[in-house]
Amino acid sequence: MLSDHCGISFDIEIDVKHKTSPKRKVFNYDKGDYRALNQDLRDINWDRVFSCNDPCLAWDRFKRLVGDACERRIPKKTIRSQFQPPWYDTDCDRIRRKKEKWRLKA
Image (cartoon, rainbow, N blue to C red; front, side, top):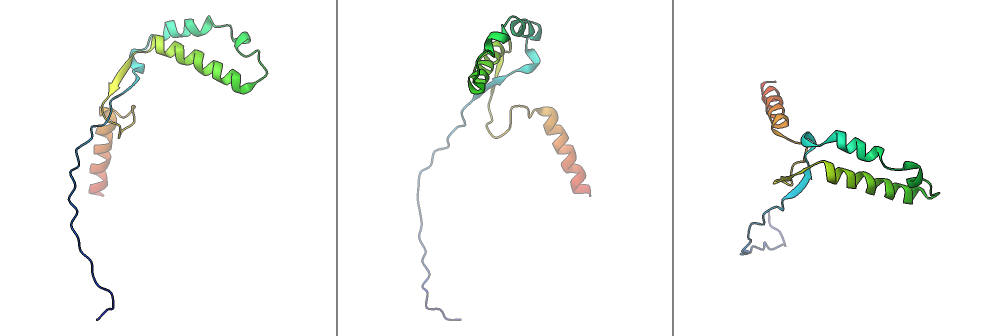
């Protein structure tokens, strides 16, 4: 079939360098000192923290206090991959492979 449109072809040459994904730090909950964390949270005067009438301010205070306590008592680990969530570990991968094997059999 004849057409009134002409085809266009072109080549693009670019030099792209592989960008490494940044390493990020996440909490290593398995090694947290939860007794000390609980004690830190018990020592906070929560009545004073929530004494304001502004819920946004109370939330910011709460978040800061709990976050600071976690920073002190739960160590961090470095995650290499940004494509998988921090909780995705070798056990999750093993289960995923097993699921995939059964899916292929079905």
